Length: 393
Image (cartoon, rainbow, N blue to C red; front, side, top):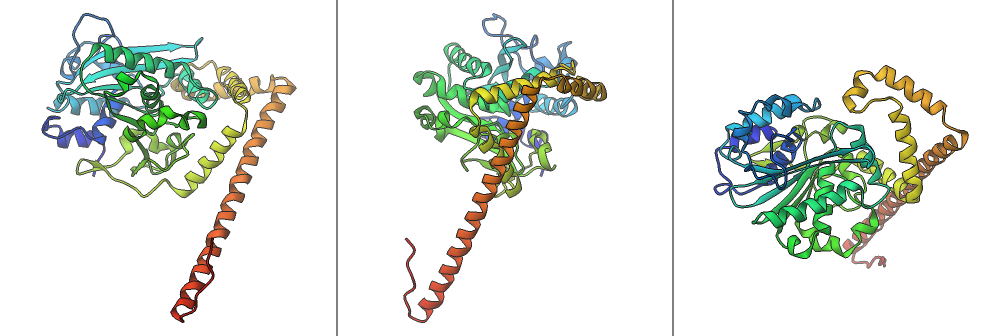
């Protein structure tokens, strides 16, 4: 039992023709999209041909692609395993797009990978280490669409116009959400070419989008995979239509794809998300939906105005100077006007109210379940005596 690095090492000797594309392969490519490939991989419209992992390994920029400090060592190990594998070493990579814009509140990255079975995998990066990327994530709970969702549709349409073959869309975290959104909103002719959509521990959608006809057009092709203690993947998720996998860490650390366990080439499945996590996310989701969208957006603006007062641009800046950042944030919070502070407390109060409502609902379900069990036992006992028990409508 191992992780995606072990999977590539064990099954990398098989081509995609010999061993068909799997869920584990999707996580490998989704994590590969976190590498700093801009400048190394050609962008859309560039005449130079796509590059392979083997070719990237010999470029002078090789070390720069592991610059994301959160996954640097693991990404290097995954890249090395892919480079040595028959399965991935000749995978052509093209159409690299990277956009980060503070003014647009945008963080977007996508890359196209050509597989040996003639499939084209369009991989969307999840949230990177920039704070603007995290702010855009929060906006996903406030409005549809956010800027990166719009760009994901444009990216898929453009790639489908340039390249032949069946399409696979996927990504980890926010990247998974972008893959699903793009599949819903691309043209029908492009949508018909999509063979699979992978949302790997990415958030869901506001109810009005999940209830739309465009969701029903793709839901049979969506593969949502989340870890046992999922947090991000349960955000705005109101169905049980997902696979749950085991992890070798606990809590929110399970969001790290390198912690997901694989045995015999397949994810090690769990029965469901932990009950405590599910209950907590039910509270959070109810709270999000209970607040008008404009107020949610105001809350995000208030929150990140305080975070941005730290003067950090990335999570690494923030964690590396957390004492200074905390002082600046405290000063910013103290400096907000009374009305803003009142609004923050009011929204926090709505969260507590959502928690009480969920707790009350669980208590009612518990009492109903206990009552049903008692009636069933009564019916069973009477039936053994030849007596017909009461019928529940």
